[in-house]
Image: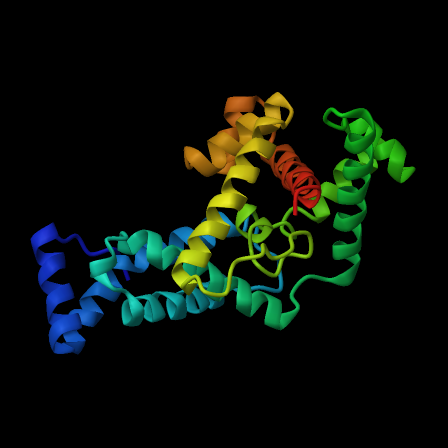
Amino acid sequence: MHREKASSAQLGAWWDAWQLQGDRSAREQLLLHYLYLVKYAVGRMLVTLPPHLDGDDLIGYGLMGLIQSLEKYDRDRKVKFETFAMTRIRGAILDELRAQDWMPRSLRRKAREIEQAIHGIEQHKGSPATEAEIAAALAISPQELQNVLSDTAYLVVSLDYLLSADSSTLGTLDIPDDLSHTAAERLQGEAVQQALQAAIQGLPEREQRLVSLYYYEGLTMKEIGRVLQVTEARVCQLHAQSVLRLRARMQSLF
């Protein structure tokens, strides 16, 4: 299926037909129109696809989140549907990945060891840990560290995983019980986003540029490699390292 082009007037008519009349054909048109959100989410959440995961399966998980979004979206709240849906699409994919326990324990352990090494070094010296320092802390060579980063590149699945509620690094912020669920989500999201922005600004210059190019400018790993004048494989290593570095820094805040 491909993304259907529709004018704002057509979209509005579909939303009216679906939400006011329960028109199933209008719902199908909306699904087709917004399917690109699912494909975008899958493409951005998994830097590289693990061999035991099927891309079509991930699209299916995300589609369930999109369907749920169409069922629950309230236009009166003045929140863009794309923003509302993307959170649920990502959540549906992450929930299914966690349910499958898709990450091998050996890779979890390796990623955690790198994260802990970064945390310890940066807490001690107050500046970004270099690859040489991380390798020394792990008692391995810099080349071995790069090999581990390559192995764990798909493990760290992106900032979406770092910010997910079930992340092993982040705890849950204390939100007053009398706040609505939507308000609580917004406050938690704003606090975490602010902390993440501060952590990103403290990244080494090359990693900070990589994060900007990938998450904010939408470049692919291959395109980023051309900008940074390194191989695509090296970009994946640097991305894994930057996300683990961010997880280590967020650990100090939450």
